[in-house]
Length: 123
Image 1 (cartoon, rainbow, N blue to C red):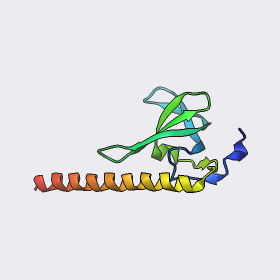
Image 2: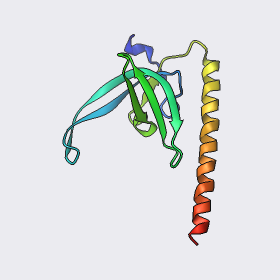
Image 3: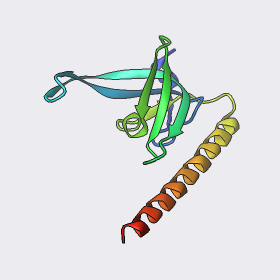
Image 4: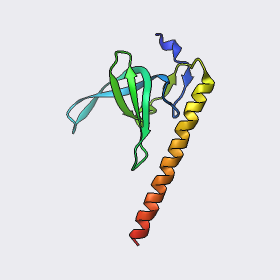
């Protein structure tokens, strides 16, 4: 697998099935005084994604090339840019992406209703 295979910028709009490459910062030291060490390049396939109920924080599960699975928040996945490989059938990707967007809209609407209900009780 070559780095040049990742030719499409998908920053901000990844979905299950995307084979992606991105960089993330690695820190050393204590939790209270972390020190930047280096950037590491992560390559893998998105095997699962979800929106958190309370804040709609997007979380991705990525299976890396070595078989290890990592969880990463969308804000961290997209932070330094994300590249992906083309799908054999880009139309299929469009359908997966549309379904993801529908779930996101439903989650945002549900959160809006919960917040409005909570705000009404606090008056």
